[in-house]
Image 1 (cartoon, rainbow, N blue to C red):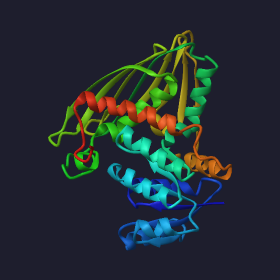
Image 2: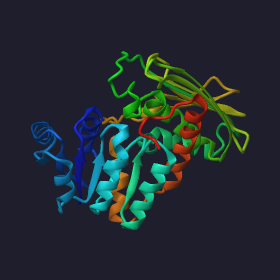
Image 3: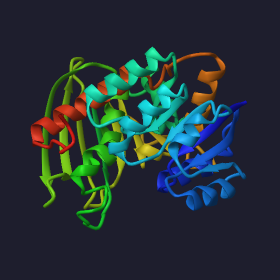
Amino acid sequence: MIKWGVLGTGKIVNKFLKDFQFASGGKLEAVASRNLSRAQEVAEEYGNAKAYGSYEELMADKSVDVIYIGTPHHLHYENTLQCLEAGKAVLCEKPLSVNADMVKKMFEKAEAHRTFLMEAMWTYFLPPILVAQQWVKEEEIGEVKMIKADFGFKGTFDPNHRLFNPEMAGGALLDVGIYPIALALLFANSNTKSIHAHAVKSSTGVDEANSVTIEFENKIVAHLSSSVTNQFPNKGYIYGTEGYIELPDFWQTRKAKLHKYDSDDVEEYVDAREPLGFNYEIEEVNQCLMDGRLSSKIMGEAQSLKLIKVMDEVRNQIGLKYPFEV
């Protein structure tokens, strides 16, 4: 049984912990927050786990095997390095960090301490995504030619909120734009050849909306967009020469639809799961640790570096650099 600690008590942590009960092979051991009463509240709500009023106490707990980090983006780097130095395996919420240099150093630290590290790209582990991958592999849509995906929601502007605060690595790209890019990288399964990006910036200087076009070396083209000020359909499409795959709410999808150009019939895979879907990535970590592996084959160092390098290039093109970056 893999014993888990959770670092942070925000919204994403609560979603993660609600799904924890549906994952096999793990046990919630402890919850840590800078606010002890908040840690106690969350620990009690999700299984009477231990509660700590500091992150350091959690890292020092010898009974904890792995720590899930659910703090804001700009803290991922520091929190992950501290956990790895303490000898703890880490599942860190996406984005793993804000630039490729930081991500490289995180994996270097994991290697130096012979410790497991994975970015929490939960989308990659969802059953409908796995079914869609199988359809592509079996050439159900012929040869893949284009990928389209968007993720946008109508947020309320607040310069101090993490979504709009540059000091907290705010902006649409790192928060939701990461998902369309991750989908494109997964289904293109090729190195990027060119990237073209445009953005609309908020008064704080971060991107409130962006558009990204990626051409891959295998000639697949991806058109991707994200926003934290506008609602989008939030669908993913993989277009082939003989048909296409539709993924409603692709980042958390419960369906995969297979359309053929020569038929009106639609094959639909429906995942009737009760949880949101974080349980699948939790099980991946549990299995990796039980097998003695230091990385995931699905979301390992190579995948995280590809992802962050694309986002680095997008930020370079739209002129977005965070104040804390060297």
